[in-house]
Length: 284
Image (tube, rainbow, N blue to C red; front, side, top):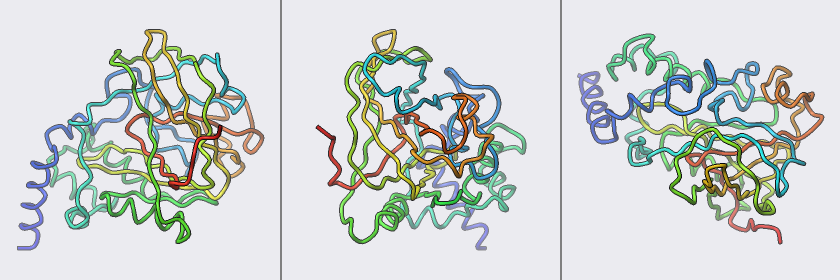
């Protein structure tokens, strides 16, 4: 009886929270539209902290690149948030198993065939969520707003009572594609001694991969303009200490540097969230 009730509940959740569009959301980067990198997610060795991100938007650069006039190729995907799965209320989210070892049962419940794009995306998400963090990092995959807020509170500690999110914003309606973007104004540092980054992961309902590092990270808001005049106010983060990252991480191959020698920076897409204390302000 319990399994029947659970199955009925899950079917109701899918119907309410966009189960039909989940078939589009649940695709690996190489199977979604737009400019995508080849193959699977970035794999820089077990525990690499950026493994879960879509490689098509992971354009790595260094801190000196954050200057007016700097041009680099970037893909800032625009996603229709009305078609994206929403975070479930805690009670509903916790009623659904979320475990790599229950993947086959979950595939049957969601009516996804083994080895389908949806099945491989779910497997990838569950794998990343259950992989141990690197040294000096905490991580948690959250499936409800309440769980996300709990993680942010625990990370910032009791001394921080209020916090807010910042995110990348598209300022024009121009179609987006992989193109050169130029920094058109002085990047604005966000003065925050701690930050939590939450990245969306493909799943039938909303799942965010949230993580924080004990080492220093610098956050910036950057105004960019594309070749087609697309304007983006992007959030960028520079990881100041990469000494614990895998030597095989893609960023080191792209930038031609060694772990721990230089900060590694990257932009966030619009559906990612960066949490900072509300006392954080842009530097003058």
